[in-house]
Amino acid sequence: MLAGFRRSALASQSLCLNLCLCPNSLLSPAPRRGWRRSPRRAPSSDGGGDSAQASDPQADSAAAGRGVPGGGEHGRDRAQGGGRHQRLGGQEFILSEDYNKMTPVKNYQAHQSRVMMILFVLELEWVLSTGQDKQFAWHCSESGQRLGGYRTSAVASGLQFDVETRHVFIGDHSGQVTILKLEQENCTLVTTFRGHTGGVTALCWDPVQRMLFSGSSDHSVIMWDIGGRKGTAIELQGHNDKVQSLSYAQHTRQLISCGGDGGIVVWNMDVERQETPEWLDSDSCQKCDQPFFWNFKQMWDSKKIGLRQHHCRKCGKAVCGKCSSKRSSIPLMGFEFEVRVCDSCHEAITDEERAPTATFHDSKHNIVHVHFDETRGWLLTSGTDKVIKLWDMTPVVS
Ligand SMILES: [Zn+2]
Ligand SMILES: [Zn+2]
Image (cartoon, rainbow, N blue to C red):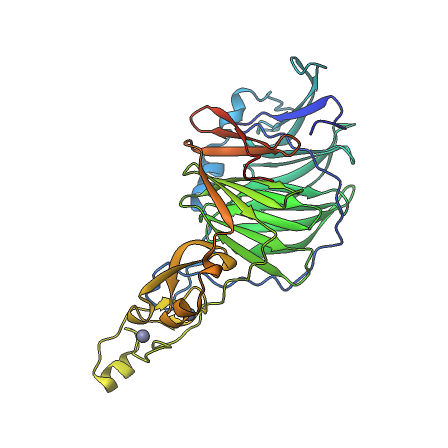
């Protein structure tokens, strides 16, 4: 892992110390359009209202309200001539041969509030960072100079970079992933992905298959198949709490996702999964034709009480509770847990199709960060309990 990494490291002066290396990669430019996600409604939909894509007001107030939070106590005050704001940023260190000593080399005064993510791109001598000031910035690690910046729609908590094509992926608290193409001193917006109903908490980029994984506080992971160029986005539902960190084992094509519930889920990404269907709109059950409760006309005409609307996760049809009384896992659609399906879909799903495509493990701590060392097959998890755990993953990641 550390091979090829010159003995200079970057650590952020923020709560999350985040060291990352960008492996070499191959990518042709990302598709510009066609990313379609089915709109998500409240789990038991009781009307036609779309509640998708709510922004995260908490994130905004946290950024605005606190001024200079957390990292400020370590941040050097550089309020020069008229500048009211304290600038916070990353710090560059030289690591000793035996990794036992860190000597500070350089400060990057990149942000006006706490640094959220930091990424060092050795090949380009770039330092990429996002902050609670909703800014994405990149600096030259040779000169220390700021090269450019971009204002994100919300505080960004996921950052990945493709070296080959110089695309940067920024996931933010509004649930959006922004893709920018970086030049030496400017950037252009390529596209944005919207699929999560909660904030993006983690991003992971596979430069070989050209897939982007985004984890979210909505408990889901979405695989954005950029390499496939068809705008395919596959949902992976295997957590009972927010997804907090992701790691990808390239050799075995397994995705490791960790959540606030302590769950470690190892996903087999060799499996071909289907996209979840768009939820259909209807004023009456698409199976038994009984009216839903807002359909007053049909209720009056047929003298029947309206029913609650539900959706079959497999076919997307709007159905009543009676016509969707059964539950099933649909691993080939990313649903590792049992979800609502209509009665005919329930019959159609074979036992073979119910075979899990992921393995589940309990870390017994609230994981905030994972790192997978592919050469040894070791997984490192760090939790809110201030404990770092090392796991031998060779029995499951192989
Ligand atoms: Zn029905
Ligand atoms: Zn169905």
